[in-house]
Image 1 (cartoon, helix red, strand yellow):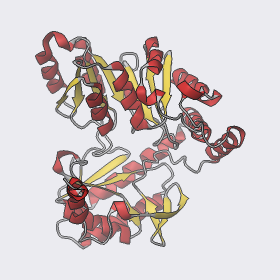
Image 2 (cartoon, one colour):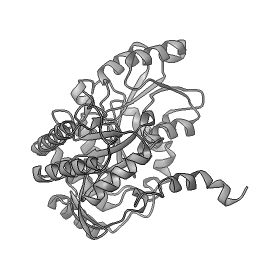
Image 3 (tube, one colour):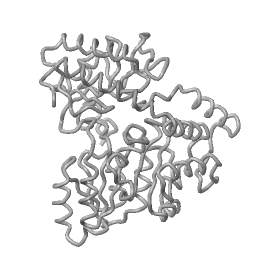
Image 4 (cartoon, helix red, strand yellow):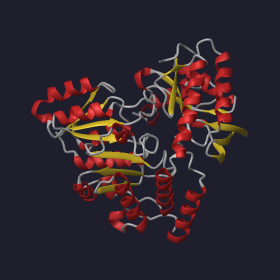
Length: 402
């Protein structure tokens, strides 16, 4: 088989978008102007697809902390923590996460993807049982596959289907691992975590929650949907990323089990990946302080989310879920999605174009992620762009979801 044959499927995906003017793989942001704007093809463009939920990427405190750390400690660590040792910032950030969650154990990883991969590869063995939400992120599926565990999916956000799956495991349900996310990043819907946790504990299973898109956004203190659901003392592992609300690069895992520290001796992504740079760690720690001390940022994010959600619903767009910082617009086909995405880009608005299989339920999505840094004027400009885009297609809009 030739190299071309190996890549034929990917070439087909690329070519299927060839009829449209541009696709996301060819977009270059020539200059980032602010947390909410960039130059694309020379045009000032509003960014509504960056996951910059709290808008902290240009926050002076973060930039100053990152610059100071780089000047004092260099541009990178050049090795893993097991090989080269931990910098003081790594240990301090882990203490800060543990204190924020009021747990004995916290670990940080070099990326959010590696956090789930590293946790699952270390705690699972071939033959272990995992029951995960069918909409789980790719890194969760990948971690389960690499571990050799036996895993099966329960119907998305369905506690009764989870119960059915655990019941079928019989005695193997005790000690199984149940995995859910807080806020699902594609459709923007939230999990019924309290109900899922109750089912897991009923069968003696562990419960893990990925709060990548919900940390800093939900909960009175910004700890995520586990806090909002009142189950922080029952969840066994909580993971998250620095690349969303924390405006940096890396990931974290916290646990109420002190034994989690032993993962350092068995998590291959932790052991064999260079540790996060001083600048990334300092920026994440400064962002964590902002979450802890400035709740008004979260309030602004929710005001923006409500304004855009209500506006899109008023325009007749079909929305994939109730209001959240992720607002996904369903479109009839991937071709229609690509055309609408280009129309929005022409209007100076960048959103995420999500096509199957990345989009759940075989839907094509125009995915918007709101930021606390968006102004109401920008939200209104985004709505005007959606209105103009829909005018160019009689299939762009449908009945709004309620």
